[in-house]
Length: 395
Ligand code: SAH
Image 1 (cartoon, helix red, strand yellow):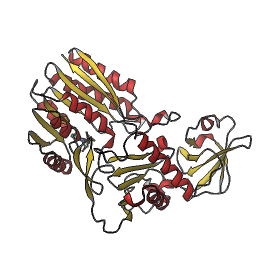
Image 2: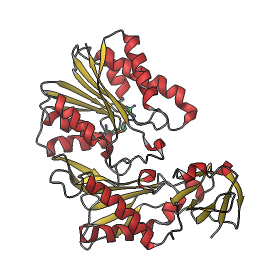
Image 3: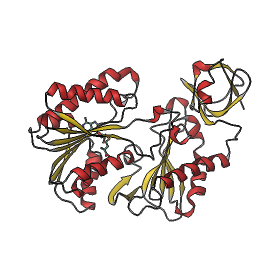
Image 4: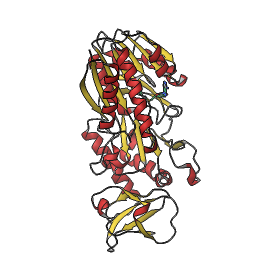
């Protein structure tokens, strides 16, 4: 196994369980590891710090273990088993009304570079690092041993997430299928509501599981309201709003495929007071009549994927929120979100504050929202916090 020896003093963050070794912290690399190989990491005084996946780039090692552990089948079963135990503690396993959740959330579960979402027996994995992509078969085996016969399939959907520069053979497909399993979509239950999830064709792993609790919050406030769900994807917030007694919901997304799923999801749950619009959400909001809606959901894609575009992203959040605040009816409620990891909650709140001030309406913060427990954040890796939201009451 190749050795990574750190510069003096650069072991500090690893001693506090931060899972990344930056290339600039490395004094010496022995051997010539291939991308995705497991390497051991050592402090300058010769003490072993642990091991992790090596990769060319600014994050040179993603730590898997902070001890002497071997990265073998026992490691994968142990780590995935620990993630499963945590989901049991979060009351997501064997729940009567929810059978989909995130099983592995990268660094938050001590498995940097790996995402696994569970859809009623089907695990959909995405590798964000070369090491996790190369370990996909061991990961599938570990999922089989953790779930046992409850596992229907493991689908690898890393083609859009694994680093393509590494020259990997990125073809999505099944790593495991139980006998008789033939499907690329499932109807899952989330808080008792039915949703079609298509891991093959959908965005990310097929569904945005991170909004589960925030959708329930929308349901709570929706009674008697006229709702506009912007950037609705497959209509998660729309179904909850209808279940909460909304008078009518208009859902908007620029993806025609997503809009077709919204219609199916609304029908699956037996609702009719709904209209779908395949359109640009910002243009739709710009054209919509003032005061028509008294509950809005604004959940755009990440405007900033990296720090370089942070300023522009903050301006975009400000403009979008100003338009929503200007248009919502008096006494209206706005659920507004940012899923950009580089936009922290203070910066997002400031963008929304500037938006409110520019429109000149009285706005209160009813609630502050975040990602749910299964999108785990390690206390040693606060960078894992990415979803933030505000619930605004606009006079
Ligand atoms: N609220 C959703 C998740 C939103 S993800 C849920 O609960 O599941 C962001 C969505 O924004 C994606 O579905 C994407 O298709 C859509 N999108 C991106 N740019 C858009 C634009 N300019 N106008 C409308 N939709 C857009």
